Length: 202
Image (cartoon, rainbow, N blue to C red; front, side, top):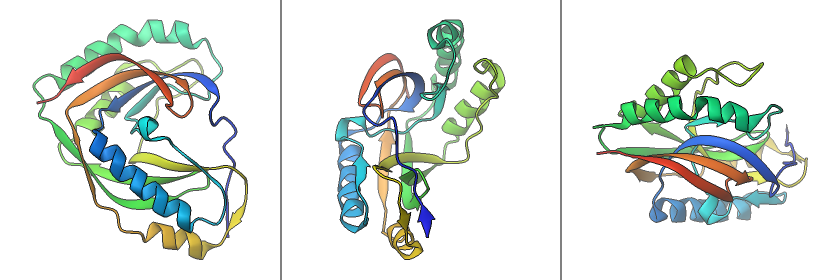
């Protein structure tokens, strides 16, 4: 049995800053179809991210769950972040995320992807290396590219067989990315966002 953790901030106001790839309407539609299949097979109530809020986070510069002066920190790193992203994205080819499997964790059901050009890995590495982390925190180290499709409304014990059945569902979503975005999130999970800057690829 897997013990799930209920999401306690779903739909609440927040303040966060992220680096994200642009996603096409076709990619979001494919994610939504996958969400419906998951919801039909999951035995407990789920929070399903709305269509316009479906996203991939490359790096959480200012995390949602954090207790420090977020605006002051953001003002201190905003210009270096823009410069870093502009440098890495300039003259870089457009890329494609290849989503190929589902993963069930104790907090969410996610779709994982690979990216062949190495740009996402480079962005993550350079931010961790060059941008000072928030007070009292260490730079984030990512081991996955993913989109969160569902979170849990309630804490529950879910049979391993159910998790295995979800993870065995076929996934084949090619997500073209023509731009890297710097966004401000004000309603979790990315239900309300503002674009701060965009860095075209290709």
